[in-house]
Image (cartoon, rainbow, N blue to C red; front, top):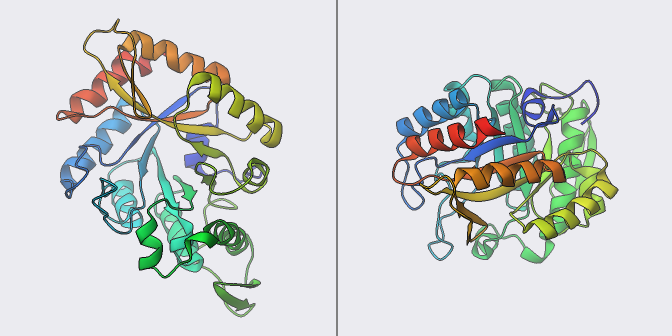
Length: 306
């Protein structure tokens, strides 16, 4: 982001040399049914008290049982606005808004509104979408999602940084007689493309404020980070890791889909290695039938040892 125009959420996640940690909704892991809103907000406040740096919500417009989950069920804009009212300083993020399925004028206003309501704590992960039936439901050509993604990113920047802009695209046109309000707290809402988003790394480096990626083996991750640093310089790199904390602190890692089950000693060493490689933020998910206990155990046994 432009120097001197950094929002509070981006600063919380990437403003120091330290590796930061976030957690994703639903914190109760209620993946196929509506999570209990009160319990989720209590856990969000607890995560902030424990020192986590971000709360991440997913954008799942329609529930598709074959895919297996509905995110936090509730719309991310409404959900994160509610979370903003129950927390004070923790960053609020989307992982990630499916840009091709949403009109960019709506996204621009929703994102800027949430950013203002949360006093600049909002960081927007953005994606092209991976649930094929949604594209037919929204009458969007899935084959054009990469192009629509680029077009929408460009328009979002224009709407946030210019007053009464002239712009035209497949989404419609603006003739300089109308303006987007409110504007973000900083020059722009920070945007983190997720995965490859059907773009070249160089495009993500130029147009994104950072890169959000999935869990990768360490050797592969090191190669990705080398490519990212060559293209993006010091722009941040964030990633998600499934983290199941074993009862035995000394337990060796067992591979899981997109992560590991391991003891706290191994995890502390693992995250130190990620920090040394140049990872800036990690979204962890380690919650079971006792999420408050899991949040606490991970914070006390891993985060405090970093």
